[in-house]
Length: 330
Ligand code: NAD
Image (cartoon, rainbow, N blue to C red; front, side, top):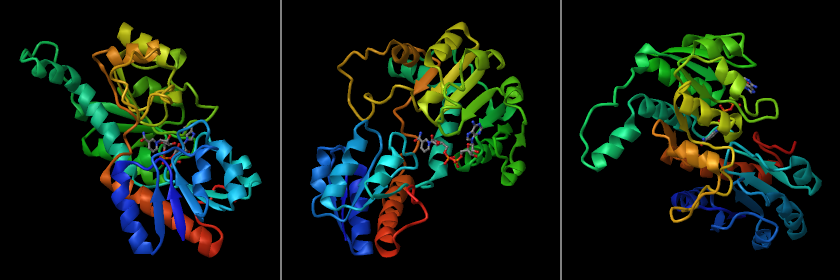
């Protein structure tokens, strides 16, 4: 079996090699993103593996069909931007990797929280210029706080467990309650109750039309003064301008944002010598009480290994059984 992996990152290469050997298959890799044009590179391959973060991916499916490539997988949980109907219409079977390491994202959400609670960005900035003053660096303790988890699925529940282990009081909201969560959190039936009680709000829901801008001027007004917002889910959950204003006014004390609504076009590029035109991004990134990271919550050794391994298994099962547990095109 021959697979070509698109958008292959340096960190993934040893794993493509390892699992090619282990599963007795051939892997070719390219750093190019999958588009209508680059899909032509799949000539002679049985299957493709890709990431999803580009706007041109849906142009690829027709080309792959013409080349006789029937199987595809994304190496991510998310498949935003892929039109499954188009994939199906071209007779291609597509799968994702729904669970590669919930702990990777959960631990990152807690890392962002601790970093803003202890004002780490300001402390680091000062230390670098030999300013060892303590004024303005008063921190807060997680064990004294109530954390509101919105979305108690795989990642939200794992995050709740970590916050619970730190001694925080954890409350949660989900459209479906998870019995396993009751050991580490107390469910709120109404999201507004979570907004009213939480000192820290951490988002773990998928992005849908319904919960776009879940954090907006109105919901922010229902939150405690000095609330902390942590987002490792999707940028579209937050109205950036509303959050920026709430941070400036002091309604929100701090934010840790691994994702940003308009991150497409910024991600995976070194733009250090360019001026970013997005004023809301620049305002948020420039605030001393905000940490922004480039969508890296997933990025651990365990997660990257599992993404490559599980996506490879998806394709092997497609060939041997015609489907797999993670098929999105059933
Ligand atoms: P999951 O499907 O296991 O859990 C999502 C939970 O959200 C479910 O329990 C669901 O019932 C709940 N939910 C859905 N809509 C809701 C709503 N409107 N209100 C309240 N609850 C709602 O998903 P997961 O694996 O835990 O992933 C959660 C999200 O994390 C993903 O959708 C993705 O956006 C994000 N993510 C981010 C990274 C990163 O690197 N930053 C990596 C992986 C996943």
